[in-house]
Length: 324
Ligand SMILES: NC(=O)c1ccc[n+]([C@@H]2O[C@H](COP(=O)([O-])OP(=O)(O)OC[C@H]3O[C@@H](n4cnc5c(N)ncnc54)[C@H](OP(=O)(O)O)[C@@H]3O)[C@@H](O)[C@H]2O)c1
Image (tube, rainbow, N blue to C red; front, top):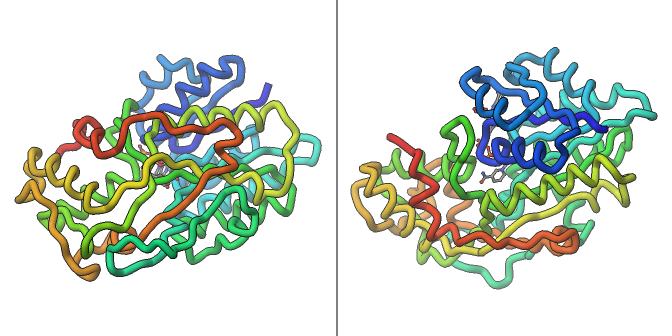
């Protein structure tokens, strides 16, 4: 029975994943690595086997846990290349007969077209997880490149097995022990709060790919199940899956977000505001002005299908725990 280690267990995705893993594989020992003791009762009631308290800066602990477990899941960060490099280095110290598997969560922010006008561009590249040549184009300059690149390189070296699950802008309520909104909502809410309004760029027809956390989690659990029971197939580039549901125009997303944030007193108007890219705020302006076009044909072959309601109708419920 493979032992499993989960980094990021209190996050939007990680908190549901911990529960789903114990439901799917109750016999597989699951360790969660968390910072806050306040999370203890949540994981105890999910029958998680071991809770280890620590932060990424506890490098000896991160390394020893990564080496000790058969399957390591990174649902904590896809930006921090130093963290994942440490995890990989420790896992690669294991002998060939007990080779470890790293399952890394990444983001489709890698694949924005870097548009600046905020308009839909029908000629932009559509990145497909079923095309290994697309995955080979991932590099350190992309949004999640600092972590995706070392993961893919490690997978190709072959001292560990790697899988990457690359998620679109992920929404849905956090049912876990922390109030984290997840990456995309954190970026969008903090930017709007700082500006005092919810921006979109130009005519706002540029699109962002989205996915509900409840669609993400069962797929990650499926990949963990495959990793724990089957020999890896193909190259590291073929074990890269893109998960997306609806493509949403940034103007429509901004309109829904503005209503919710206005009701919470975060912004001064229930209407979003069209601005040039330079005025869309520091955090997300590259995202908001761009198109994010992806296809998850490989994930679909493995059974992935998005079924949850649209982000546009989910925002109110998702941000219920958000306070100023
Ligand atoms: N949500 C999205 O829209 C989205 C889109 C694309 C990619 N992703 C990727 O998917 C993964 C999960 O995303 P998420 O939205 O679920 O993230 P999240 O809600 O922000 O959760 C991050 C998790 O990482 C933990 N963490 C952060 N820094 C840490 C540190 N220094 N030491 C120990 N733990 C630390 C957090 O612990 P605390 O609770 O203690 O803070 C939390 O458990 C990330 O790699 C993210 O980049 C997410």
